[in-house]
Image (tube, rainbow, N blue to C red):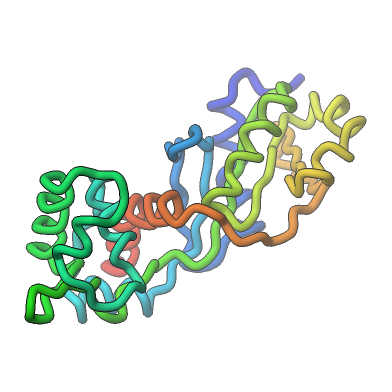
Length: 228
């Protein structure tokens, strides 16, 4: 007899996943929403060094939660000093919206003004998450889970599907579909027995926007970790 619900599966699987894939500094983000969908569970490894630099040395202790502000930040990040006028011409957003976002970023230390109307992102500011596992949890609907897991390549280095062990058979019969897409396959039963049937290999995420969205989502939990 398998799990009664995905909630029960998650309750059993979450501590196992943290033990298998996590580190001492792993944070778990449930139901992470991004531009192409939503991932059931994300495990992120947090660098205390990078987090402390951001919150204590640079004094940037709030996340960027507005997508327009984040897009503005990324247009400037790693670009070097540019004039505000030149920045306003970048991308498709209107000048008024970009000015609003830029002022917000300047007011909260994400962006600094360097003189002569030039701006740049704050030096030494970088993501504090260093490794990410995206996991889709389903009782039996492996095709749906696999499709969702493929979308996670925009922000996660590793992507997995986790199924109820009582319903793993059909997915195992199609393991080549997981291997071809570089998506790992896991199973867990009600007793907590865990099996990794297909391993995923590391790939670099392709979306800076989605990786930074995840980074900002973890900020508050990560700060709680530092205080503990």
